[in-house]
Length: 321
Image: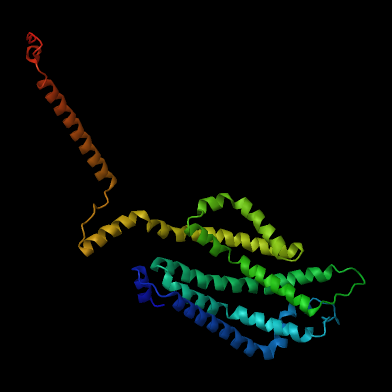
């Protein structure tokens, strides 16, 4: 759907429902094709990719220890699964762009200016969360877990369970790094305000640790390493939401009257009253009060002059027989 077609839809000439379904099908096919191309390009290197992902754990295993594969097909299916998930993660910006291209014609210009930067920023923050988990969280977590193994217990991790663990951590930290985006959206939509969020800071901190407990494995290090970035990102989101919401507030009701006034002048329609300032409004109220007082005085004078005398009422005339 082009922008011209969207403008036609605003005046009542909408595209048929079938046309929207055809465009949705095309967008989905492009998204699937992008994931498939990346997967086919990464599958020959799936084993190398798994070695790279398993590097933080292998670096802290005792000397001579290795990972194991419990099921028969695990050595093939686990790298296959990793290559597919990596293809989806890497193609995420293109997938978001296809979603944006589908819904953008239905958005107004100010909504486009909001959604497109947030879409790009959300992708960057998601990748930053994954990088933070791999380069900061994994070395600390695996060093702690391998050092707490009881004496006589050899740590031998299954490759499939390790991959599930890693993907869970990646998703949790990628999602947690979207906190600034969620904060900005809440403030922009009017669901809350920056001052209200600041007042609820203690509850936000407790909620961050609760989310860290639910999204991470049951160890205190990974929970804390997830909760602390969420708190910091929440503070950043509050700061940027205050700056970002300022033009949104200025572009609200006060400017709408001026825009209507300008539109009426440009189109030649009957021009509405221009918005008055506070001083002009007070002067207008004073003028109305003086006119009202003058009108009441004139009514009182007319009442006094129009009152008939006693002999003009005809009460002294004798009744007719």
